[in-house]
Image: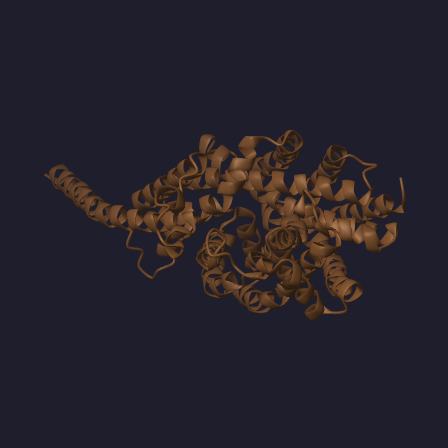
Length: 497
């Protein structure tokens, strides 16, 4: 076992220490634990939301996709969702602050005055979050194993990391996640930017010579293909991801933790600068195309290149940064999932549960969720693989009901919101399990149509269902209310007589 593993492990231990230390001087009631007492300013929120945004899939996936398919990897630094965030997040935060909202399901429940709808949203959120958590643990196992040059198995790495994140999330909640997010982002910024500049110059003499060399051997990698991962796929997938991105429960938890709406606007306006980190990750993948050809696992291109160019101690730094890229988002996912399960599902079953009891239950759920995630990560369940494919397409089905709720006068009812979500999620599950896409159904259609993102198409159907059912049931509910009012007034008159 070399110095690489010890450096990676030391970084993880230090992150755990930061997370545990974050609770000092704070009374960990439910609000402090779940949303940090809504006390985080612009800079802290920047790091928290960045910490949730840049994960193992950014660290390994962006470089791996550039290595594997080339140009389509540029979808990874889509900045469209920050435009949506600038306008959408402040009104969400203001409503959450006013009505003491602590989870995503709380928001829908109070907006639509429906406990049932809140439960549906909670279930959708937990399904998406657990699969997201599993994939973080799988990536984390790969990173720690690679940084130890294989001396530590990926399974053991997953178990150890799960133990660390359980400790500081249970003790410090959102405060622990905030402190580790700052440490993680500074480390990733230095490591990724350095390698993204070093590799092109070290191996090719610069960025332009690197792309010229790739063009001479693999010219197809610098173009979008005519079909499949085409321009249509890029545009529609970017829109779908932009709409879905801030709908994940852990992203909403970060939003609710903000001190003000202004902090969220500042975050949305400045975050595109941070996206430049992903550009350097893509450069690393392109640099590896000719230097480590023939990899069976494209996601390993970053580590294979680092191991061939740097001494073990630096590979340890890379491994530590990558491990934190999994650990920090995992901690916030655990927070949001535990809060959803306790506050929006358990309390519906046991409505007399106090906030103090909910707090204890939420902390108890953290290790249970970690054990479930570790189990699926170690067994690489095909079910989880299917769920992960569906994650973004499923979570975006919450957008139509959210959109209508933010209008000055919401035109739809809880029945419309419920119908749209059920139809949308059901279609996503069916299309994923049966591999039903426009391209599969109509292979002769032009690529500009058949490469349209399936999740976005289903969300458009969801919009139509939500609106039609919602508007129709407004009239029905109004008539029902009028009848009830007439009966009430008649009873009052009869009682007087």
